[in-house]
Length: 159
Image (cartoon, rainbow, N blue to C red; front, side, top):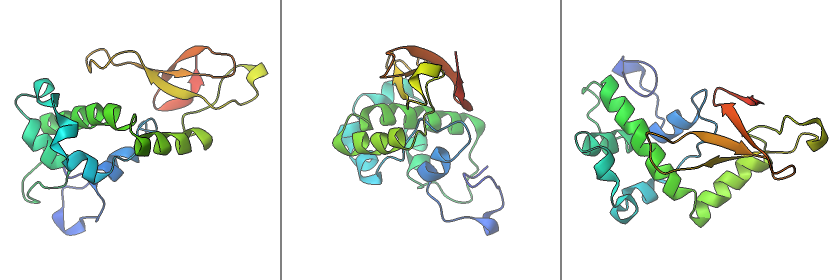
């Protein structure tokens, strides 16, 4: 299946994989990574260990370098999502990444604190580990300084 949601190549939409992925429901915590950042091998150093089998194909998928006639398998899709998440974790600590996440924070794209006294304070996502197997995202409220478990597809519902 292609990233535009259709397997029909004649209905191909000229949208990058990253843009498509970030606009999917439940992916509000991601920002679009600049292509030049992904293409710089220095920024990807050490990530191959997490995807020893599909690393190159996953990277090609993210960078829209797959042959349009080559089907994207479920495993390749999962690998591309994992790789994008790993790259994203590195990207958001750069000046451009911080700026992109700040815009999402100001727009309350990550949601609001559920406490009444915080009066709609914007929250920010935070991770506790770089390990993709244990990488649960939580939300932090800077006003009450509490951390909440949230569902990515229902980002406004925290507990």
